[in-house]
Image (cartoon, rainbow, N blue to C red; front, side, top):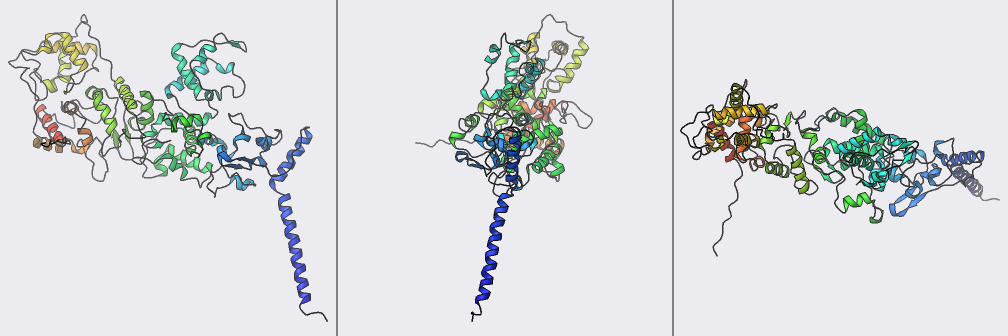
Length: 633
């Protein structure tokens, strides 16, 4: 007799054995019929047809421990791992020419994706392990910027000029090989390249020497050719658009006060595919408020193509962690030596840090989101009244309660860069016209009109002077003793007073003003005894409430005023009485700030005594210097 349970046990063991065999067969089948195996078999089939050696079938990987890279991408992209490139399938094509060897660097440092995956869907799909999403074709150059964070962008103006010269001089007529000039910028260029080309002939073309002033422009354009043209074009655009005025870009700029650190903003969307990230950033660059209703970012006027180039650069803002030995030279120079990855001449600094708010040509702009008017720094009357120290201190300390941050902080502008900015702004002021003794004077009537419009608001219709300006018709006024002296005062202004320069007047107008001043009847007044009136703050406050509040204090429901905050300690600490007085009387031609020296359609004229009162009130709100009390020994 058999035991009752033995038969059942044998059946159970048989079933388990069959299941084990099925599992083993399934595992073998799963491994044998994988996507990557069929790809490699297809490669070997094509290799046999073309007489090329076959590859052993199996998983392949690139391991770069120093970079933290384990890439199995070359299991399918066989030519990237050193296999012979084959025609007939894009997977077997050679990598386009780049400065690196893919089999030495790996794939994911540039392209992203999950390098350890062995299926296309896992390697190319959404990342769940902290890996970067794989780049789509239009934006794959962003990967270059994750290591090369410090590639320098020369002066945008020079690059534009240089690219035009390269085209005009038909440089590609000789440099015809694919990518011939695509990586020349990596080798480092100096103007000596021009001398080395002297007398060279190629393809029936002879090198035509450039003008001396054109060599730096072509050098700058060539230096941007580093194998990633779309990335460099995007970085050049960022250097022109003033993004660093509101954002931190590669560790330099303003972060948190107006806009987020761009590196953090980009990383926040790593859960999306690169294509979806690019779509969002492109749309945001074109119309920020369409995607983010309360966005303070202005429209930058970018085309779709330009927005996509900037997007390539934005997607590169994911610095890859590298050891000291692996850091590219450009990154070493910026991260360790503190070099800039942008040009530091005044024009380039203005474009990189200021243009987004103050306009590409310092013409000012209106921010739609806040209805705030940003000052026109190139306004000739502003430059006539603001001296270099005013400009320098404004850049250093910013404006409390406005969008203007303090730039005298780590990670922002260096002292030499602030000086370069001041020099560039000062160069926007019209040049002082030369005095020409023999130039004929215009009609006296035209001179009187020019005097009435430009001089009488402060000096009086008869040159009798006022609370803010000395009498021109005084018996002892030396200014009226020579035409050259009057011309110099008009052309240069008088430092520390409301008398800014009048360089915007035509030479004929200047001669007319001189003639009008010369004909003023002498009055029983003393220039030597004249003093500027200190004004009365209490009266000035009433006038300020009546004439200034509507523009210079926020309207109800608004966070910020249309015009500058006149009570700002930052403004009052750098603006002297002369600057304030001159601004009120002369206004800002072409802007909302009227000239209170003359009556207008929407405002009354303020007498000089009233202007002095307003200035006295403003000055009473300025921060008082701290007194140092010396203790007795």
